[in-house]
Amino acid sequence: MKKSNRQKLVKRGEWWFRGIKNILTCFYKYPDFVYLEGKPFEQTSIILSNHEGSYSPISLEMYLNKPIRLWGTYEMNSGFANAYKYQTEIYYHKKKRWNLFLARIACLLITPLTRLFYKGLNIISVYRDARFLKTMKESIETLNKDCNIVIYPEDSNGGYLKELKSFHVGFVVFAETCLKKGIDLPLVVAYYNKETVQYLFDKPIKFSELQKRFSSRQEIADHLLDRCNSLGKMDKVDIRVNQGIVGA
Image 1 (cartoon, one colour):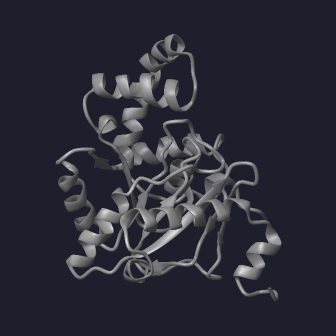
Image 2 (cartoon, rainbow, N blue to C red):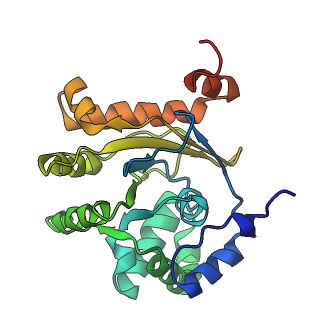
Image 3 (cartoon, rainbow, N blue to C red):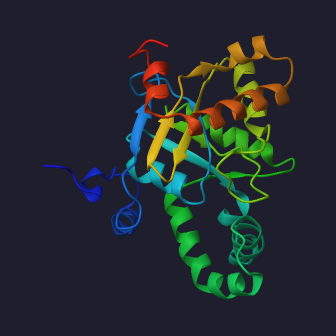
């Protein structure tokens, strides 16, 4: 008998948070997790994924059977005023193209609920100033507990697009810092396809290998951006070729 979304739900987080996720199984389907390596990656890694609105982070939190913590904007881990301003002006208006007035009205209800969900997620706050050092410190502590870090590096100021336009380089700075501390992290690029409800994971690549191939942070970010977009365009034959199941 085929398992339901609720039966596939990963038991992660506090009891009240698991209760919320049980409700969300009615709205977020279990995705088909596909790995180009032919099997799930084993080493603690940085997962770089497209965002696809809330679909990617919620799908990973609910259904990926691996220890993970997500990077997320610091505003959602701060007070109500900061979270409300971010959700109305940035997330719903600028990124999801909602009417600003409607966003302000809706977020009076949405923001308290979203902040509660973020508390359950236990996200790592990402700052865009000198406090980024706090982000890196907490992330390294998380890695040392054999927990994968999920990062959404896409520039989504123009909205969440099917084909991503650019990657921010913050994850490269973080990987560089880890390497200096003797942690050579594998990076796993992933792409969530909302139409097919498929989550495709690329083969892991060590950060040190990327440093040998490319001369700058931006070149590394651009290469992985291109790879992420390539994953989004793969059909079943492409996937089987990459997995080595059929001849190229």
